[in-house]
Length: 295
Image: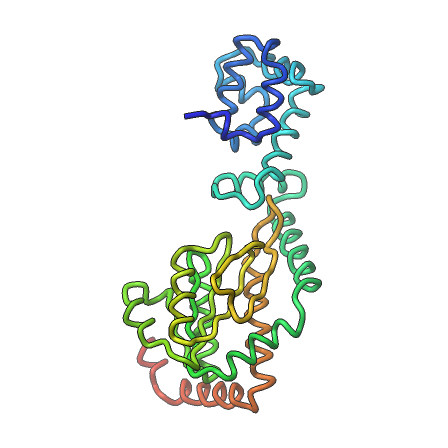
């Protein structure tokens, strides 16, 4: 396995440019760094030297041979590569490490809050009321709504399904029916809406759902953070959001905010259907006796 291909390309360039100056200790240090680029960006020079089995000062000497004033500057370089070199990382450990790097100065909570606030401010400037209205109009006219999100976003699809059902819209959470997807999707028909939540990547399963929706004449909505998300054919309506830059917390609040806005706008345009359904559900829950039976 070519481990050098796993490290940031800029580090690989530095190694190549200075290869004739590197000592045996340098090679051992670089081997440790390349084995685990994520940890390399987190450890200090003493820790890296210890893992490489060399003198503590060796890490400082390596940093200087590569053109840095000392190991802290070299470590900052590695951290910058971690934060900026790979967009939103496919490696979960890299994503967490990048966030820890950002949190070092101000604390974890402050770092997460800053990320969420920044992501929400970007949302204000990138998604319009017209985008929200396109989704809510589509839902208002629907016969049934089918929602699907994978991974963390199966929780979002469950919550949105719950809220839409309480608002009087027949909604199916496909993520909760993974063992019955063929049976459920076989009922898709014209007048139905499929709302897809695609984050970090557009999976083959989502592509298949889009294809089935087209065959059955159902409309497709897509909420995604994938800049170049490709569905063939394209969804009928799509909202593209940023959940944060590399090293940020990759907000779950941003897509939930969009969903909340769509459901609120739906209540504003459906001639009281949502409000009547919510009031009816409240009365039923209070009078049906189920709450007492479940205690």
